[in-house]
Image 1: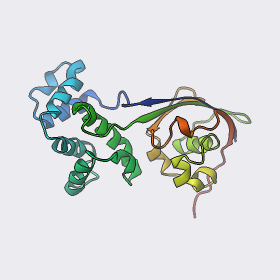
Image 2 (image 1 turned 90 degrees about the horizontal axis):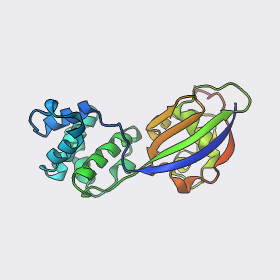
Image 3 (image 1 turned 30 degrees about the vertical axis):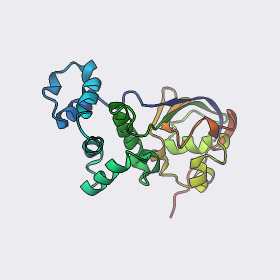
Length: 222
């Protein structure tokens, strides 16, 4: 199916609103030994957590938050290593397990705010675009579909295209797309917003704001 694609704008942000829930704040406050977290006013929870975190050494705080979000997938040694690396490197952009990069970004930015910049500042991109079928009915698009359709508007220097050239340009599965695309939002399956790392897509990557793309049925590997 053929699509008309329009990239409307890319917003660069330091945090993705709504990622941390009130329950997250309460549970983390308890892990940082803040008393009666569940009775605090909801609007004060983010600020209270920042205060509680700042009472700890940066790498200790990182370990606590990492264990909370990634403890089921990483062992203690891995968490300890990442907690130290986060102070000097943008781990959320470099971590080889791409499906964990979104959570590492949110953790990094929580700590960055709590410590007034002791952690590197990483950024996310919110890509606003439309994808309108020109020869068929509107259908629900997946992260994989969307990235493949964006291909023609992105520079060859774009990191996704450099690392996944075949998956972006050929009719083959692209399972890693689910890790690259942190959020994909739409109300009508035509107008979308996509959240990802600035490292994956940024304003300099866009070489065309209006272009055409073709989406074919993926040939499953035998």
